[in-house]
Length: 479
Image (cartoon, rainbow, N blue to C red; front, side):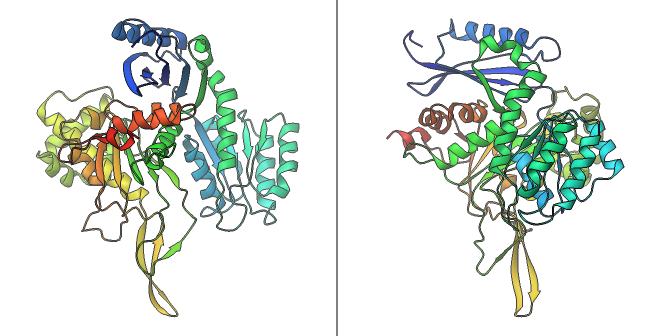
């Protein structure tokens, strides 16, 4: 790029690699990528310097970056525990808030904490605990009880207090007097069946920036970047929101789904209202957030390959891979025994593809809503649980399992509606795109400072997969 062009450096401190993307802001184009090892356990600056050296080699010198922004999922990501009142209500609202903040949920508790619950929480050693419970003006006895248990226990992480507002001040004072860091936030469920997770998300992000970045050693490379703004999964969510909604008067792709197939989890993000489209359907359960993230911890391509086999069924998976059941089990056992293993043969690649297809199908099925017939005094009716995603415009795939596979369309097609499962509200006819350059996190970061450039960058690099209509996506944002 020319010496006077404006550029941005977008960084992801990952668990395995520190990944960089350099972007020309005037042309909204990638000018280079680099990576180095994530040396969080020793000195994170070493990995950052290696990544910068790699980038410099690839582009022939580093420009003066106008922005140097980072995300982080290093050292296991943002580990959170949630505690609520009723499992289906405030505890579920707390879970949604935690996932929406880009956290990795390692424990979720409801009702009055027991001594055993507290011991489990101490053993989990979370980075943040989110304490909820009670609508404003409603039950405050349980959240006060749970606050007392937490005040007396050995956890040292910050506690976000996001429950009954009438109890918040007293709880915060009680935690503070016990030497805990209490961060008050708005109630995640201020009224019955009313969800308000944004104040808790904002509090979690502030803690992440102020404390977790330091705790994980990321600030040891502070001279190389301006700020770590958010956990990587939240950056992916913000990238998805940008691609769906557009910016600066420019259209995005419309309501969409993102499928992120990883080695440890499969994450699904939807950007859509999810309101019923089935005539006469009645929404049941908590209202769904416009931007929603679910994390399937049993559907990781490496760490949880055996769990995918169990969830999909070994016979079905063997048929999909074109192998015998014995050969499938042999290959999956080898994967489970060596999570760094990459496919080396056609058989292993077929198994990887079958695992990715199954992970996509099951994860999207869990994320999407469902309908059921219920019987009322007025006769049978249709009830909807969760989000109706049938009309989504696009599905975007990201993650190595998709990027390195020869048939990403065959994997992403598993996100579509299945005629054999008519109650599932999965997308019926979305266009399929591949985030081949791993840019969703970068778009989410760049959107915080230059949203229009981030939108142009994202739309021009979401590639229609084989078998899809080849469209010049850039022309949609040309003005």
